[in-house]
Amino acid sequence: MSEDRPLHQRLALVDVNNFYVSCERAFDPRLEGRPVVVLSNNDGCVVARSEEAKRAGIKTGTPWFQVQGRAAALGLVARSSNYELYGDMSARVMEVIGRFGAWQEVYSIDESFIGLPGDEGVLRSTAGRIREAVWRHVGVPVCVGVAPTKTLAKFANHVAKRNPGLDGVCSLGSVPDGEIRRIQSRVPVTGLWGVGGRTGTRLNALGIDTIADLRDADPLMIRKKFSVVLQRTVLELNGTPCIPEVEERADKAQIMFSRSFSTPVTGRADMDQVMALYAQRGAARMAAEGLRASVLTVTAGVSRFAAAAGATGSGEGPSGGAAPVPGASNPVVSVRLPAPTQDPIVLTRAAVAAMRGRMVPGTRYVRAGVMFSGLEPATGQSTFDAFAGEGEERDMGSLLGNVRARFGEAAIGLGHAGLAEPAGWTMKREFASPRYTTEWKDLPVVSA
Ligand SMILES: [Mg+2]
Image (cartoon, rainbow, N blue to C red):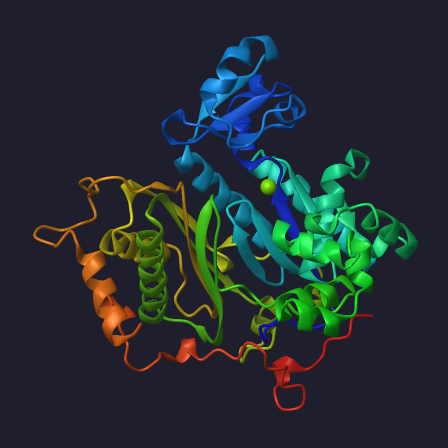
């Protein structure tokens, strides 16, 4: 766990329901109640579905031409993907969610973990208020799962989604353990965050079929036979938080780099450095996978707990409950790129510029990230883009890549990203326990 997160608090996973479709519906109420699908670039295949479309048996990845013939009979509406809209809606959703959390980890374009202090009653009402606020201010529906660990918060979110009677909120602290166990014994182990099909098959061979089975498995055996990652999942299922912030992740919808800093970033120059580094790592990742992005999103976050313990003594303490903090504390900014690109120069400029416009100098940012979405295959030459200046080499990305491959990651970079000496904020202490006895801000917090 990163060190600014006090123990003994809950966290919530807030996830937008059918995100792309919900964005479309926010601006076109006629789509409400109808089966709706969103198509990939060039209207190739189905990438997102409304509940009604799921019930009609339309699968993600189905080529549109195979569905088109049945569309009229089904009353099915198709929309081309509008990644600029989704990126901007995502930024708005994240800003609203961030107001309620002690910390925020933007996990994907439509999911965010946040830290929630308070007792069970406060947690439930805060979760409900998050849902209302996102609906009122942005116009998309979210579900909120509240639990002591990330894995359980994901599970709680899943329960909230599947049970309309819960009004989109499930806080595991309000559910008797027997009931939780009963639900877990009906959900296949592959329904769990981070457990893929292949791992599922191997678990099944050991008689571990459901989430409840995995919860009861011996963590050491799981570590020996599988991995420390799956062992963490077992521990998390039993209520011990141990999944750290994931620094890099990628799926079909987005590529994301984010991290917590051991030393808060306060100045523009340092934040520029962080943005430049992630933009270039994203560019390298996309080059390696043959992808380019149409939308770039930058995020940064403060810890309200760290702020409360700061030298000024101002700011809200953990006992302040879930009162919103100004949105500027957790800026999330989304930028449509002039054209889909994997160009490190364009991406670096866009990331640095987007964050500069929103960060407040002097604020102690404890985490930041860059996300690339609207991904598509990079076919042919990248088109002209407005961010690139005159005379810049178009194949800068491969040049940087070659130098890195020969001389190491820090050997070269744009702006401040090429650093032989690691910057202060890169000194990460991911598995360090809090300095309970020597650091005021690490004192355990007890809420009564
Ligand atoms: Mg979602």
